[in-house]
Length: 333
Image 1 (cartoon, rainbow, N blue to C red):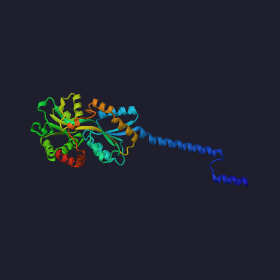
Image 2: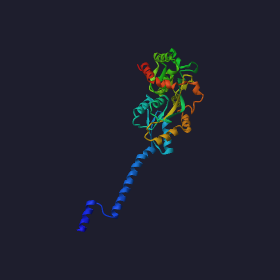
Image 3: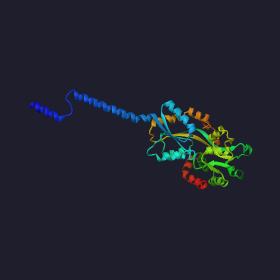
Image 4: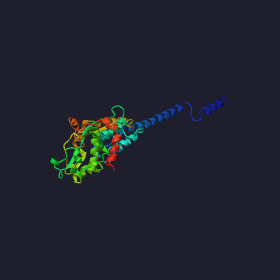
C-alpha cells in the first residue's frame, strides 16, 4: 500500500519528469536554451543599430556617392541612401522627412542648401541638441555663354536681367525649388517688397526661360539657347568640364553663398551610426575633397560672407509660405 501510494503521488505531482538528477539536467538545458535564444534576439535587434545608417541626400549623387562609400570602407558601417531629383531639389526629401516625423525612416539628412534645413529644424525634424550644422560653401551667381556675351557687355546686376537687351535670353530653374527658391526668398527679405515683386514680374515680362534644375540652366547657356543664366557654382564647373563655353560672372552683393548641411533626425533608428556619419561629413577631409571636385568652392566663406547677400533667416522662414505662393502665382502661369 505504501509503495502504491508513493507511486500515485509521483504521477499526480509531475507525470512527465523523472526524479532526482535528471530533472536538474533538463532544467539546466532549458535555461541554457532560453539564454541562447535571448542573446540571438538581442543581437539581431541591436546589430543593425550599430552597423547601418540611412541617409536622405540632397547633395548631387556624383559627389555624395564616393564620400559615403569611403565612410563605409573606413567604418564598416553600411549606408543606405535616398537621393532627390534635379527638378524638385531638396523639397521632395524635406516633405518626406516631415511626413515621417512620427515614425522616422532616415537617420541623417545631407542637404545641399540651408533654407530647407532650417525649415526642418524649425518643425522639430532634427534632434533637439546639436541637431544640424553647416559646412563648406558654393554660390548662386550668373553664368554666361562666352561666345555670345563679352565681359564688357555682360549684366552687372540681377536688375539688368529685366532689361530689353536680355529679352528671351535669360534662363533659370523654377524658383519654387532648390537653391533658386532660397535665393529668391532671401532677396525678398533683403530688398523692399515692391522692388522684389517688380523684379520677379520683370523677369516674366522679359520672357525668361524656366527649366528643371540648375544643371539644365548651364546646358542651355552652353548651347546658346540662352545667353545668361542664374545657377550654382558647381553646375558651372561641371559644364566647363564638359567643354561648354560658359563662365561665371564675378560674385556680386546680390549673389548668395550656399553651404552644405547635415542633420541627425529626431528619433533616428540608428543613432550611433548617425552620429558617426554626422562627424565624418563635418570633418575637414570631406570639405577638402568636395572642394577639389568643385562640388564646393571653399571650406569656409570667410570675408565673402560680408560681400554677398545677407540672409534674414527668421523673417524668411516666417514668410516662407507667403513668398512661395507669390512665386507660384508669378512664375507658374
